[in-house]
Image (cartoon, rainbow, N blue to C red):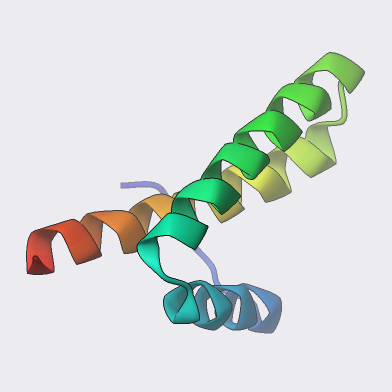
Length: 69
């Protein structure tokens, strides 16, 4: 598992994600994947890192909800 350090902004984002329903989470995930592609195209490595972290949060929440159901 990767080393992970959490900031206050990450915690706020994670809490916001927890309030979303599954449909909205999937829409947000698709949006973030497009952002990731744009960051790659523009070679914006800082944005890429941020978007990857956000996608990791979204994936974690979707996995937990899938296991609970």
